[in-house]
Image (cartoon, rainbow, N blue to C red; front, side):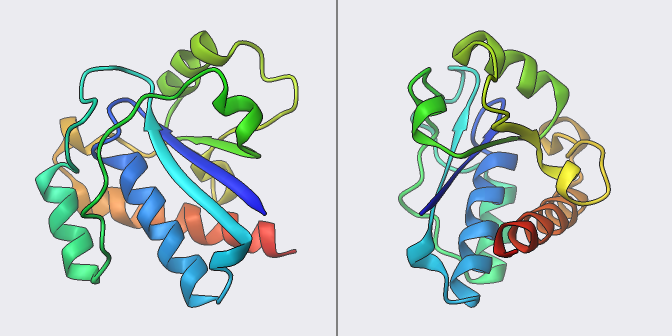
Length: 149
C-alpha cells in the first residue's frame, strides 16, 4: 500500500483539496485499496476546523464527499507512517522540516514537482480557488501516473 500525506499551512484549503482530488482519481482507476491518502497542516491555527467554504463548494461541485474532514497537524511520527509527504510550497517544506527533522529517506516533495514545477498558490490569500484546483488536479494526476509505473 502506498501512503500519501498532503501538507499545507492550515489543512483547510490546499491539502484537503489535494487529499480528496487524489482519492477521487485513485477511485476512478479502481486503485483505492492500493492507497492510503490523508492531509495535515504544519500549523495549529485551524485544528479541528472544517474545509474552507470555497474549497467545500468546489468539492460539492465535483460530487466528492469531504464531510468528515477536520484540520489536523502533522506529527513527527508521520514521517515513518507515510511514503510520500507532499507539500504545496516552500514554506510548507520549511515548516514541515521543523516538525519531522531531516528528510533522510527523500519522502518530502512539492506537489507540482510531479507535473511542471512551481508552487500551489495559497487561495486563502489569492482568492483564486479555480487556479488552485487546476494546479492540484494537474499535480495529483502526474503523481498518480508516476506511482502507477
